[in-house]
Image (cartoon, rainbow, N blue to C red):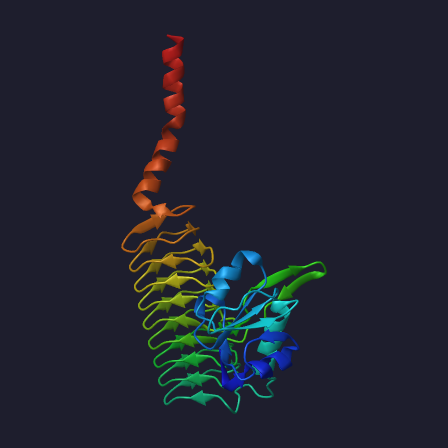
Length: 314
């Protein structure tokens, strides 16, 4: 997430009331999670296990809960609670804006696009040309939709990320300030939910087709011309490369990559990254021919045990 204009390290420290290490006028351009940070961004880290990763990332400002040696060319913000202060920055730069109309005055809708009754179109939404948005679709603030997109009834684009920190008093949500981006020629079925990024974009690639009742988590990037069947759940921060096919009731863990032209058969569970150009099945998902051989062998176990028993008796 880039700020509307560049800020200085001193200005950012004043917003969240923290100490800092670096020049007062050190430039700060935005804030992002570790997997999408760029030069000029703030990244937060609150566990020693991840200090090195954050300090050596592309981020040039690290919001951290310990005073450590500052890497050359970077700056530090020293906080007793980086998670809390990252949320403060999100709320400062991307505050919640209430709406008083079904279609926000700041939304932009392209030529020949049809929006059916009872839809909600939030602030700063952009919808391209020749789209059909069916009834009862909710499109949250800042969502970007390309041309020739069809979205069926009851779908929700841009709900908050499912991202929580456990506190003694309960769960504390990491506030989402990102977007959903739908590229050209995408079809989205009924009752789908696509969560916005925490600081970046959740992206549905050009020409991809989603069936009904699909959940896609925050910051996930779906490639071009993918097919996803109903009741599939994709976790956050997943990369699905081009022309992947995922059949019904598949679930995935977060932070993995599914390679180009992979096929995931129905009711599989994806627990790790998968290579492209292969077909997978089962839980944990493995190449289907291997998994099916294993299942065939398991079905033969009673007969194998019976044969062994007979051999021992004789």
